Image (cartoon, rainbow, N blue to C red; front, side):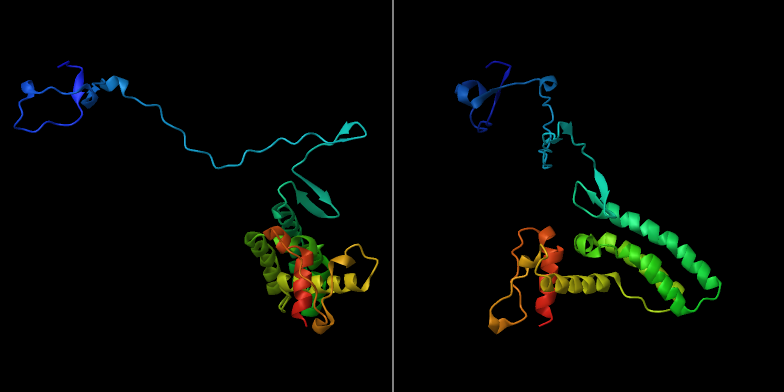
Length: 226
């Protein structure tokens, strides 16, 4: 037998090695240890490949792509999340808390402190809240509510939670849209049959972002009040 070949299966002990004729299919070549190194196979990547979108031209000028921009006081990002916006308003609200503490040291009444909170701090936290609060993450909501709790300890009175403020404003805004037949979103609130007076047809949502948007939230609130 060739010294460079090795048996794939061992022979029975009662058969001498010299009296056997092993077919070539049972023989494998002896590979030296230095030649058995196999290059590592990289694991499959599950991350989606980002596609490069073609540039947009307006009047021959290329529109610049940015990660986020501010529109009507709201920070909108290319990922359609609200972390940038919530971080910005939390920083602004925390700066106003310093003024609230100073007013308490001057001896203002709890009612005056609450009015100051509603005018200078709550107006920042709840600005356009119907547009962005529904799709905030739990971490963003905790950071916002932490500011409300800090203000509550300073004023000494109970302040409405930001979730309650969001729910109240969604309901009021929906009522205004329904009463205004010239509103662009009036057609989204379709009443059901007369047997179910006060109920509105739900909009089908294919994504969680759409499900948590203002219009679907408003329709659910209107239906729950009847």
